[in-house]
Length: 328
Image (cartoon, rainbow, N blue to C red):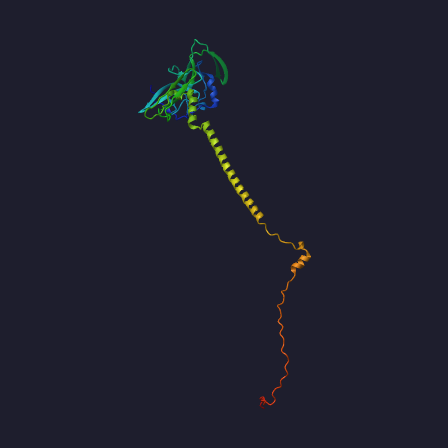
């Protein structure tokens, strides 16, 4: 089956979920009155399109998001293909996971074209529904047993190509629901990659998909523990090296001090004497001046006296020259 003239509203995050304030409405059923007097239909929430659904959403079967998966709380109800030239795309209708919704295959009334999902009711079983009835601005709770026809819901239509969500390794993906469990594996022989199957984009697979992303992008607990232990061990080794270095330096200082003390004990320094500690007699004795003995004197005897000799008187005496100064 080919869907023609689909309008792409853009991509959705792989883990997209409706707002928490709206998710509680997934369990609620509302009674909506139509333009025909007395006509109404039952719809499972949330019913607020602007605040509870992706950006640009409107209850229109010709609009879809691509590339995208079913949001959290929605699951794949049916699928078709969208072909544009040589490009083929899988289109999935996502319905709320809380009940057994299927795609609306026939449109008997105008409002059914905007819903897309229906939970058919079997008249042979008894089911009691509590419905919020809104009329003239007032809300009232009404109980329905075996709702005639069924209960409707808005669909979220998404699309993806075969390479949009391909993983880098060949793996087997397991899909689980409340009633069945199946394993699907599709591997390309040339590229060795796994192509996501339509069931992989359903809301019921969100838990397994999140687990896969957590292992792929996050750091495991064992790796974190290993990093912490390695860091602590490194700090302990550094502290031990610093302690050994300090101990060696302290030991060298002690050995140097011991060697210096041993040298001082072997060669004590001279102790100066104090003058007050010496006796006066010792001072005098220490200060005594010793003279060297005189050399021996030789005694010479004089010759015996001889009679005086008279000078010769007969000798001529030479007169001395007399100097007279000249008169002026």
